[in-house]
Image (cartoon, rainbow, N blue to C red; front, side):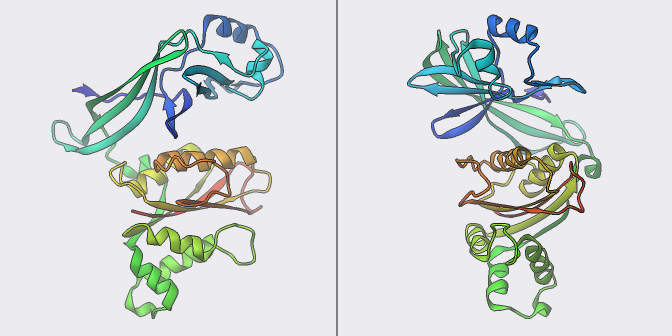
Length: 309
């Protein structure tokens, strides 16, 4: 049993109708040298964080593995003269299947037993040979102060059927103190006078898919931290598997559309829906809508989610 470790997702691959994170994506020496000497206008590094790069996109087509995106659109074609390159240098791609919490352990204080599962795809000169699934257990030590670890707040939990009946039949608020609170948040997520693209039919569909409804809300500028926090809040550290999700985003009018897409993608993957295509007009089991609010800073985002388990 190994101790806690952190693996970075370095790329993506669509395999057997599911999108996986690639853990060990490497470039050929030829591409790496050209990239090092590149002085064009396609910014593939953040000058303030040069250790950070975009992801690589890999494609498996008729049993052959291709590198189809090099960090940013058009960079691969500019360097190599092609929009995809046969990845003949790759021997194995390690895909992340799941990194889940099994249970709390008392071997160390505030530690959890976790299971890490990967799928290794083996290649010979870029041609697919076979796959091999691996799992290992390890201990992960969690910080005790959850306030420092998560930024999500206003997390509510109740029976999804009770909420659906309340919304449909207009039960008296006195029957349950939580129902009107839930209803107020839902009203903020949907507006008949706005092109948010969320409506009551979407909500009822989400509620019908699970037994328990969970609502969480967070706002801030560190989007990666916010998304991780929301996912962790409603899945209890990947112990629970969401059945459906209603996602409401609120951003400044100048907030990049591509960043909105990335938030939706991260939520989609975090809840293991892996639904395609990943666009704002998604349909079941994942509904998303975006509203503009110029009271927010241009790099700030507000996220509300209603998830059923």
